[in-house]
Length: 233
Ligand code: GLP
Image 1 (cartoon, protein in one colour):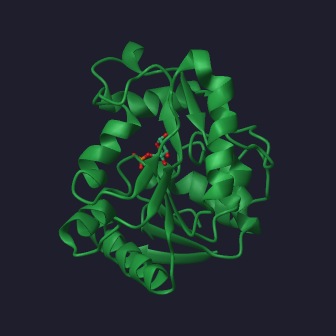
Image 2 (tube, protein in one colour):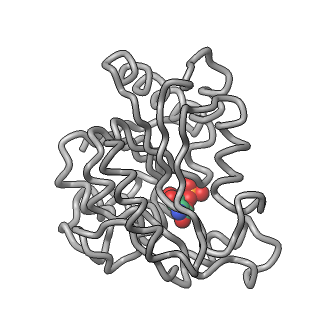
């Protein structure tokens, strides 16, 4: 794993943007995308750039169950607002977060991923070390699955909702094996609340109780983080 310390999210976004340009020059065609606050500056730089994704495919990590794509809290809406409206891809896939069809959808999403191998995957990290919505205990060989969110994740994500009761309790997420299939990975981490997860991911044992530690097995991971997130390394 390569760790790059940056002063703040703006610098982190720039470092990631430069890496993205390199990958595009090398022929990247499929981007794996993430939501959350950590990639926002990166998406902003893309929006302001002259990059053209109209011939490319994007696949997102996850989506809440029970929110339609028009719901401002859905990840589909987040992606539209922060990237797709300005920079449309040929196709942009996100899991369909419908409880009744979850089983078909997970199988369908695995097929989509098999047909569209990810060249560059963008990741954030949860305070408990989750990647995508793969909570502690998720098997490293997991494929796309229906997830019951940890209470700590619900609490962390409540800041985006009016009240905590509005936070969905389930999501559909790429599995850890799907994430590891990406050719290259960039993981953003900012702030002290991520420090423990980052220390465990980089220096700790590879363990399913810290999902991000699975990345130790991947040959091309770049961690872009600020001093606070790296403070326990
Ligand atoms: C959510 C998302 C993750 C994201 C994490 C961290 O749980 N499912 O993909 O990495 O939050 O979010 P943030 O970047 O806002 O700290």
